Image 1 (cartoon, rainbow, N blue to C red):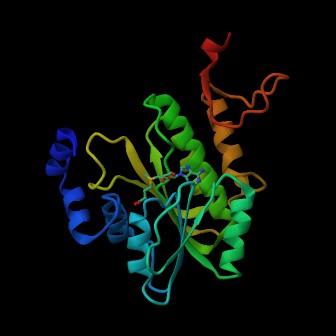
Image 2 (cartoon, rainbow, N blue to C red):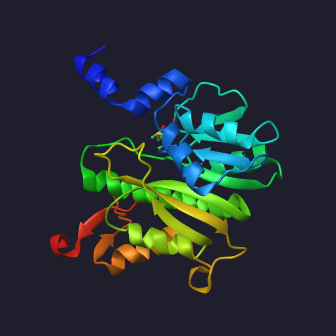
Length: 250
Ligand SMILES: C[S@@+](CC[C@H](N)C(=O)[O-])C[C@H]1O[C@@H](n2cnc3c(N)ncnc32)[C@H](O)[C@@H]1O
């Protein structure tokens, strides 16, 4: 193991704690802290964990739902089995993944959607933050389709442009929405979590007939950040919150 890894590990109490308790990732403690503060998962619940690899959150969710609950994890990457959970490989932005999830749920009420989803980081903060915003928004739209009324939704967000748009979309769909930064997140991290409780039976008036994706896109345009689905003969449509300042466009 590298010297750097050794030093980080020695300094990081959450990593040590996770290893000693058998959690696959230190991020397990972020969900534990969210759960302690907000109680988003109840005994017997059915929970969907989006972006579950390597499985730390899934392990915590299995403990929280207990023997009568159900936990389904999904990730682009293959995840080693977690006892008590069902895990599939899938891209949450694809309709086929949603169909597969619905098939597995087989009419079961889904009480909570948890998501620690994160893109493969490029190291360019603006790009990573834009992709993260898009992913979290897509997960919110997925949650809206399958979460039972009264259900809860948690997603990771990176601080930055457009977050207010996602917060607004969340407040139109859930009765209680807050941001929360667990102390288990690294001090240097710009991540925070959007905690959405009690899904409304239907969205508030301004959001009806719109996806969260459309609303965040509108918000980005309002704050003078261009969001284009560029389609030319050479380049097929590119979907995404790619942000360009209007000033730079010309
Ligand atoms: C920070 S990791 C999750 C860690 C996990 N919560 C744990 O405790 O072990 C973020 C995950 O999001 C996944 N991800 C990114 N984009 C995705 C997508 N479109 N569909 C499904 N999973 C995705 C990544 O593959 C990655 O494994």
